[in-house]
Image (cartoon, rainbow, N blue to C red):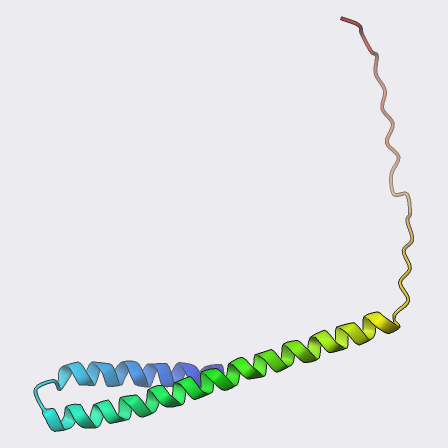
Length: 93
């Protein structure tokens, strides 16, 4: 999906360059504008679908995490890995 977005963005960039290069020819300009609008509409649709797909994945992941959390039994074990020994002399003043 990301590759399709990149391809469309490239096509839109090329169409905009063609538009500036053919500004003197009104017929070509109109044809390029039409194609550009269609590409931009397609791009918006794909971006919107991608956004909603990402939202669905997030919701499913949250539901799965919640289901696992509800059924899981948590247990913590503490182990001593080192001993701290402080030695020194306290001097007054």
